[in-house]
Structures are given as C-alpha cells and as structure tokens.
Image (cartoon, each protein chain N blue to C red):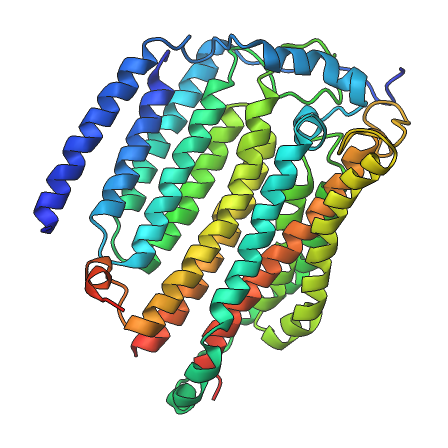
Length: 114
Length: 96
Length: 251
C-alpha cells in the first residue's frame, strides 16, 4: 500500500501510450489520450493523501481536523474541465482531417504530403 | 466568529477498511484503463470511457476529494462522451 | 517504420521509463505519509483568512487565483479554436452533400427519453446554479457548476428538440456570455489593481460568518463568472459539433 497507487499510475500511463502507439483510428487515439491524462489526476491526488484524514471542507467540522492537501485537489479539478475542452479541439482537427483526406488512419495520414 | 450551523466531529472509518476500499478501486481503475485502451471499435470505446469515468470518480471519492469527483463525473461521464459521439457521427456519416 | 518495429520500440522505451519511475518511487515518503508543509498551513489558516469553509475553492480563486485565470483562458481559447477550425471549410463542403440524406429514415426519439430529459432539465439548471454560487461553503465551485449548467442545455437537445436547443442558446448570445465570464474574471483582478492593491487580491469585504453565502469576498464573485464562462464554452462546443453533423444530414 505504500507504493501501490503510484504503480497503478505508471500502469495506466503505459497502457494508454501503448494504445496510442498501435492505434489505427484517430478517434481511438484521442480516447487513449484521455486515459493517459487520467493517470495524472490519480498521481496528483495520491501525492496529497494523508492516512486517516478527511476532505478539506470545514463547513461543519472543527477547523483543526487533519485534512488532505487542498492544493493538489485544486490543480486536478481545473485540470479535468480544461482538458475536456482541449480534447474537443483535437476532435475538431480530426474532423477536418477526415474531410480533407478521407481517412482517419494515422499510418495513412502520415504519408499524405501537401 | 460564531458559526451559523452545528459543529460535529467527522465520521471516520478504520484505516484498514479505507485501505481495502482504495486498493479495490485502484485495481478496478487499472483494469478499466486496460479495457478502454484495448477496445478498438470507436463507439464501443466511448461507452467504456463513460464507465471508466464513473470508476475514476469513485476512486477520487475514496481519496477524499469530492470537488474533483464532481468535475470528473460531469465531464468524464457526460460531456466528453457526448462530444466524442457527435464527432463520430459526423465522421461516419461522411463514410457512407 | 513497420508496426511491429514500432511496437517493440515503444515497449523498450516504456520499460526504461518505468524502471526510472519505480527507482524514483523509492525516495518518496510513501502513500499516505504526506510530508509537505504547504497543505497543512493552508488548511490551518484558510478559514480564518478568507472566511471560506471550502478550502479547495479558496485555493483555486484566492491563493492561486492567477493560475486559475490562465486555465480559464485555455478553456476560452479552446472554444474559440473549435469555432475557427470547424468554420473554415464549411462553405465549400456544404453543397455537394445535400442530396445524400433524402432516404435516411431516423427513428423518432422515444417518449420515455423525452419525458425524462425534459423533466430533468429544470432541476439540473437549479443544481448547476447552486454549485456555481456556493464555491466557498461546500464541495462546489465555478468549474463543476458550469459543466452541470451546460448539461441542462444539452438535455434539451437529447430530448429530440434540436430546434429548441438552437433557440435556447443562439450562438451570438452564448458567445457574449462566454466573453463576459472570461472578461469578468480578469476584470475583478484589474479592479483590485485600480484600487492600488496587487492583481486579484481580495478587496471586497469578508462579511458574514464562515460558510455563509455572502462571505469570502471576491471568491464567490469569481466563481460565478467562471461558472458562466465554462457553461457557455461547453454549450458552444456541443453546438459547433452538432452543426457539423447536421450539415450533411439536413436535406
């Protein structure tokens, strides 16, 4: 349990990258990119966790209760929403590539020049 | 400053139970990521991605991060699969 | 480079990366033994300093507000980028494809889906509004509230009424709302500069007991602007992609 979450992080990264490298369809590639991005969220939250602590919201609990790190949660939270919008931009590029070249296979797209 | 609402002591579970929960969810997330990356058909992969977003949200909840859970749930299970399906519909329509 | 060679090259590289990563893990304090002072300090002083009981939102909009301005503008630029990329070739591609959809017979939306979608659109709107305006008290905030607000508009589309979706969120109005949201955030920061304080410092009164909706000064205001901007950005993204699918389909 000391290092297991971080091992899972590198496993998700490896699996997502493998899917991207051996992909034959641009949409499949974009979804594997989403999986790779999710590994960073798990890493961020895993770094900030404290055993036996609660969520950092002091609405009805005393202020000095041990709580997990709020800074990494703030980072992960904006991360999730912004990367969805950037993925939409990637989807727009994929649509335009399909319109111009008629194919969504990355291996064939590489060979088209100009 | 007087708080306008009652102050309670937080409900905690034993660390062993929390460990079991987190390990189970981590294993499920790893399996979900493998399944998503190895599914080749795009439409099927979108559904798997939606389920994977749900699993991730549960994992974030077990890591005591309710804000990130909310974000991941709305984005990963609703907004992102919708955008992907719209793009797929556009691409497949032109293939016909 | 053949696919087999590519696969083996990737596996070799990934093995090296994983080896380095696991070697570096040996120096970490281990999962659950959080050492750093920053998180503990913020947990201790945030409620006293900003009267906000939701510490994560206080970090997002107050202690690290400048990072959040940057992230919000990434979102803004991504939405603008999608509009630009998908608008470029639309004029030429539209004409030849108009006849192809004449024989397409799409099944009508089932009654159950329409009922559930229409019934849930109102409560989703209220939930999104609640989330966007209560950033400082509980697990909520501009980003999540904005996405839930966008989901309410998307439910209208999913109930089969694309024309109603167009009428509820015309592109000019959505563009304007997004610009107001993004500009409002930057404007709140600039207002602090005008008063002689550093950019984005909390200049409104921190009134109210900790946890009241009117507490924490600019955090609530900024969260409201961010909610508007994120909702408008997602509605714009969905409507751009929808226009793409309808271009070929509408006879």
